[in-house]
Structures are given as structure tokens and as C-alpha cells.
Length: 322
Image (cartoon, rainbow, N blue to C red; front, side):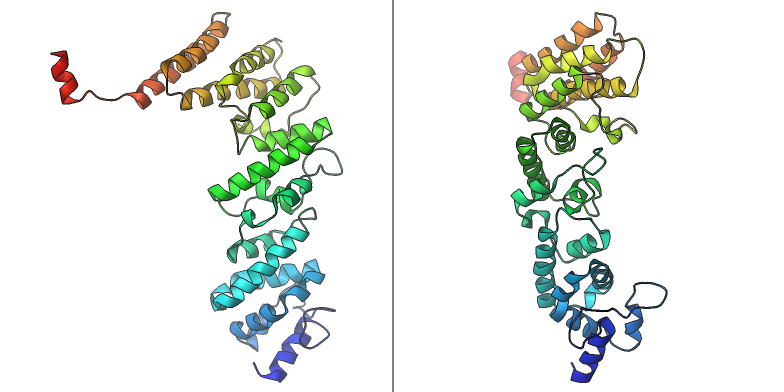
């Protein structure tokens, strides 16, 4: 790149040639650098950005702007530039996991082929903290991966997040913090009996023990469930607890949904008749006590099991029957 053009770009990005720091000259109406396209090609701008990317980390507003430009002009970048910027933005996110999250930065990272699996497990787990109001997980980079996904996670990324959440769950000392981590964990793992047992007991221990709003309203409570048949007695208790009072409440309806979703999840992976019988007997015990609506769900579970496990007879087997 011509040395004078490079210095001019540097001055446009900052008060100093060759770097992206200090003051930032932008379009008057917004934090935008698109106006530079009138004077320089995207390739030249991306080359300058790639060479000076780390300087943008000094100011999150500047980084947001530059990340937006990278994302919109990535097809002009060379492979080695993409690789370099990916390494640097991964390092930035890892060092700021517990800080406020900006979609422009994560969108740029994913466009550069960033993977959540690239981040250290311990650091993600430590960044799952409760917000200042004490209502939910804090609005930071770590929680954004499980709450505000801008791309579809790979199986590897989901496993990584599951492990990070479980690690955070084990490390939690505060009960509210622990139960909040558990609520998000169920999205990634419905087999962990330790987490489900803790959560179910937490709900039944006190009517004042809350469930996050997003798991009560909008039907999303079904994400909290267990598919582990060893937890069938606890699921049975959850159902009874949810129906113990005649007065309805969103909280008890959500707990009922957890119980019903768990019965279905167990049945969906049952491959043996004795396990299916265990599920149906538990539900029948409740249905016989006056909860008639369970009979229909039992029938649906049984029909689904038959369809899923049905194997047509071979010609040899049919001949043997004759």
C-alpha cells in the first residue's frame, strides 16, 4: 500500500498515522467508516485493519464499528488476514467474557469462523454470573452464547457450553445462582440426574422459589426436563406438587409442564417394553387419582413407542409362523 495512503487511512481511523487508537474520525451522523470507501478500496482498508486490528481493542465503540465493516466486506479479505483477525478477536472475547456483550463483535467473530469451542472452559464457566438486580445471568459475552445466539451452534459448541454450565453449577455456592445455571443447562443436557434432582427439590421446597420468566411464559418451560428414567419418582412428585392446590398459577403450570415434558422425554428414548411400562405405570397412578387428561398422553406415548420400535416380520419369520 502507498505509504501516504496508509498514513491517511491511519489518520482517518485515529489521530495518529499507522494505528487505530486515539480519537476516531467517523461520519457525522453515526459511527461509520463506510464513507472511506469513496477514497480507498475495501482491500486496502481491510489490509490496514488486519495489520492494526489489536489497536481497535482499546475502545469498544471503535471495535464495534470496525467489526461491522469487516463483516460487511469480508469477501475482500485474504485468507491469511481472516485467520489473523480470527485469532485476535478470539483472544479479545476470551479476555472479556464477563463484560458487556455487543452483537457486532460476536457477529464478526463468527463470520471469521470463530468457534465457542476455542474458548477455555474454565473462563466461560467463571463468566456465568448473576446480574446486578439478581434476576438472571448478567448480559455478557458468556451468557450471549446461550441466550442471544446469532448463529446455529455446532454439536461441539453445544457440548462445550454444556460442560461449562455444569462446571459453573458445581462451583456455585449461592442457591439462586445455582438454580439459574441449572435452568439454562437443561437446554443442553436432559440426562444429568444430579442437576435435575437439585432443581426439582428447589422448586418443591418453597412456593416462593422462582422460575425465570422465559421458562414460564411462551411455552418454553418444556426446555426444563429430564430424560433420565432414574428420576421418574421425582417427576411423579413434581406432578403431584403442581396439582396440589386448586388455585392455578403460572409457576405451578410451569412445573406441571416440566413433569409432562419429562415423561415424554423418557418415553422418546425408551427402547425396551419394561422401561415403557415403568413410565406408563407412573402416569397411570396419577391418572387414576383423578387427573384424567393423562390417559390421552399415555395413549400417545404408547402409540409413538409402537411406531418407533415396530419391525416388520421377515419372509423367513412369516414362513415359520405358517
